[in-house]
Length: 100
Image 1 (cartoon, rainbow, N blue to C red):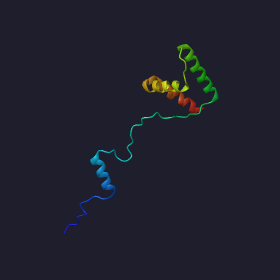
Image 2: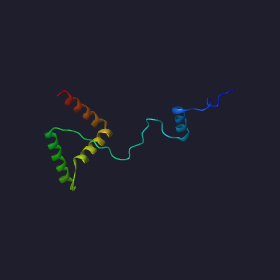
Image 3: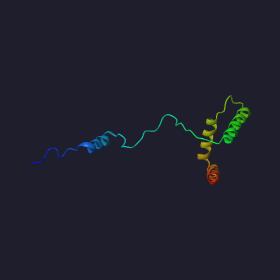
Image 4: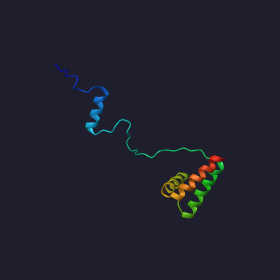
């Protein structure tokens, strides 16, 4: 005689089977984040002053009403990711900074 419970999956195996059948993402899979990610960094005071001064110059030169450090950092990230020469220069600067 056959045990009717043997043919059924139980526990985690059953849950995995239901997920696979429903098209749900596998455990550990994450959905694409819809909201921006907040980043916090620390920089030396002289670097902060230089960047603040630079963003002010950009604001004046372009006639923008405001240019924030966040605007500048986002643009720098985009350029670094899009341009191999820029990425190489950033890597070289990181190596130099690490040696200090």
